[in-house]
Image (cartoon, rainbow, N blue to C red; front, side, top):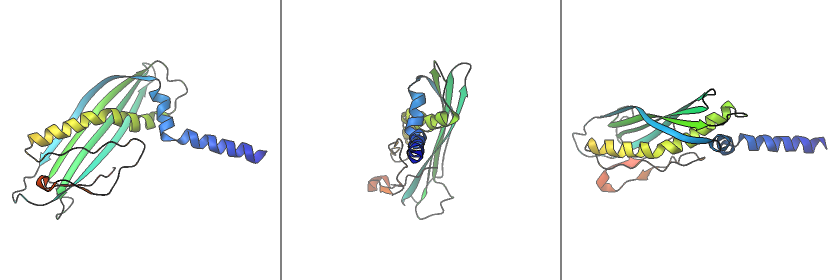
Length: 181
């Protein structure tokens, strides 16, 4: 009988550790209140030769803060896109675009929620909510830089990003590699 009890506790613990379940404990209670662009950065090194494939890397970092007095949760996702010549030094960037946003959520009650709930909520739900703003920012910034069209990859909730390269049409002269980090 002791083994069954231990097995149930382990099983229950595994369910609690599920990132989507941890995040949904927060998302079930909140309403989206605001989103703001906090900072942005873009730069390019002109490719004077006008040829060559580009390797593109995508990265995300998230901080989450909670104000228990007001019932507000602040999710601060920072996104970056970096490209370098596929045949060159990866440290020598051709293009870089970055942006940081602040998302504000309001909850009537935060009782029973833990730091782990907030962390998973920020990294899953916060990034998911900010992704369309990031996608639009990248597309417009790249166009204003006079570069070939570039689409941000699909944000995959609850799954690690694919690391396999995907080729863009030859007219775009780029190759995308999605990496987390």
